[in-house]
Amino acid sequence: MDLQEDNEYELELKKAKKEYLIAADFLKGYFRFIYENAGKKWTEKDDAEIEKVMCAIKNLAYWESVKATRIMTKRQKSE
Image 1: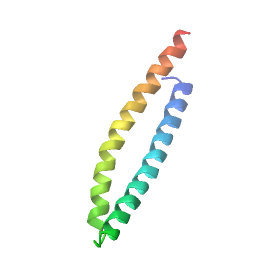
Image 2: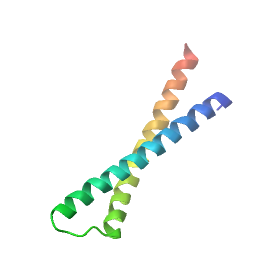
Image 3: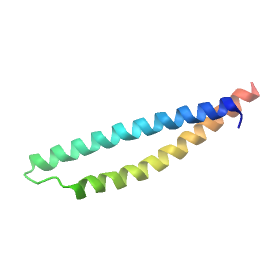
Image 4: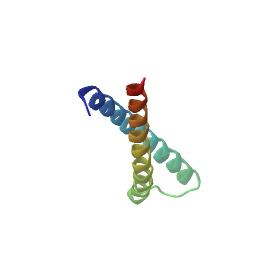
């Protein structure tokens, strides 16, 4: 990769990480709201379960982002 590709890759990675954190916070808030409205107590274990799910989603999203960036870069080079 050249410097421009490295920079594009880093920008995409930062964007994916930011989106992951936003999604994780949203899901935690959503499920906590549901639990508490059902009379259940939200625990750190519940937070950990959401984190495990989000890590799996993040890994998939990360590789999809890398793939999309590489495809885009190849198309730009061929033009």
